[in-house]
Length: 111
Length: 118
Image 1 (tube, rainbow over the protein chains, first blue to last red):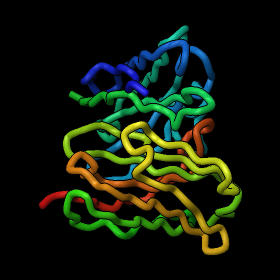
Image 2: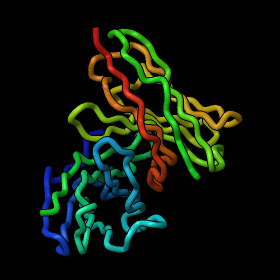
Image 3: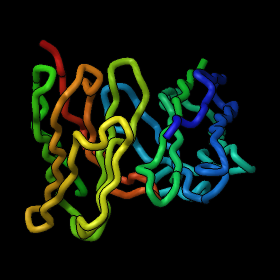
Image 4: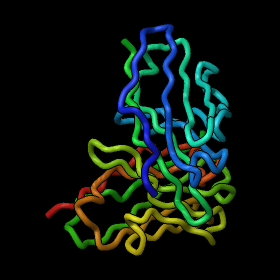
């Protein structure tokens, strides 16, 4: 149950795009299409932004998109806005006997 | 409004026990898997435990296996986490979340804080 690997930080100016990677193994990210992404503003409850690799829950702006290639999933935030500044975590199903695994987290800064 | 409210966080001595509770409202509680996720100070999110909608299947992180027990009472729309043999490294904000391992955790509570210290 090792954490998925994310870059510690990412940044962009308002209006630009930022892409966050989430690297696992064939036992988690690469083996299943059950990758989710969460936005977490410190002190608040995390919010689901993407599920099943690329699906957006109702109410999540289409500026947020997800994809996967091999053992690496990605979250892209287009048209960056000030309120997008937050910590972002990926998670993945990791097999029938596992609880599931989160990524190490990425702090997104809007310059 | 779909809502989850955690309670039970406290200051506990190492080796002690505590039970966290989570009350759900605004949705059919018995229809979804439920999870506990924690965040230690300055650290990332850690998936602690998951329970199926009917309560018959449970899963645990290696770090808590054998010490924590997840359970639910669908008649009370409530989720629980019994924590025994607590360690300093269990200190964290504990979140209750609606959802299991597949389709994302769609609703989260505000969290309850456990501090394990002498």
